[in-house]
Length: 158
Image (cartoon, rainbow, N blue to C red):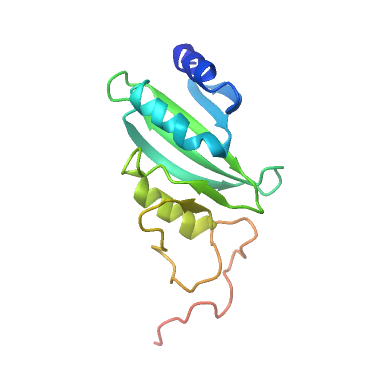
């Protein structure tokens, strides 16, 4: 576990961190969704996590907090990795965008919106990239049928 990073974040954001976990040398912090941008800005400016390697949604259908957004950060200076998880209430699938912190989050947030229906407020161009704009379903949610929704997308004629 990167104790210096965890200690710095715990001191700076004592009320934002819900839990800390270390598994096989990978550090994960679960943080409140309201504090995501502040924590990410601190990680970039003070802790040298200058790149976001991945950002994605999770649907843990049986968990109390069904949805969460995961941020995989990397420092090209210290070669450290850090994972942040932000649980999101199923009744309010909104979280602030981190595209102002890392522009590379743009595409990842759009993909997460398209596949899970999680809205990133403040995103510069939040629209679907895989599914049609008027498609009302989110294919990576656990409640989406395995064979898809019949006749939900018109298929090309043979």
